[in-house]
Amino acid sequence: MDVLYFAWLRERIGAPKDRIETEAATVNELVEELRAREERYALAFADLSALRVALDQELADFDAPLAGVREVAFFPPMTGG
Image 1 (cartoon, rainbow, N blue to C red):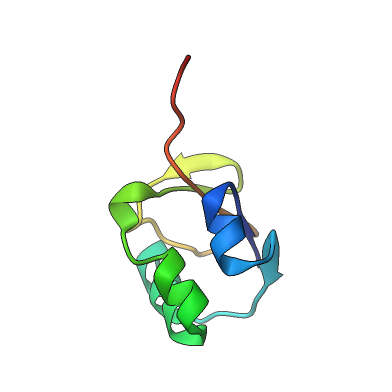
Image 2: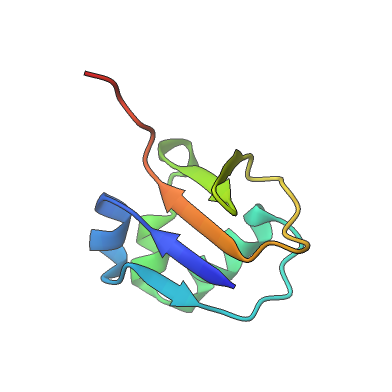
């Protein structure tokens, strides 16, 4: 699956995306796997309230299932202007 990072999350991780194999059943489980990779991931995912997630380009919750998902995108909340 492709995991995409946007805005300051991309900067903290140092990459725009990862291609990973995972056994995670939910987004929360995927986040735990990513946090365990390296300190830069742990720092990037330290505060989930500052992040949003999309599964195959559809907004989702962190407890959403990953079955059949090909792309997970993490990004900060959007603000209007």
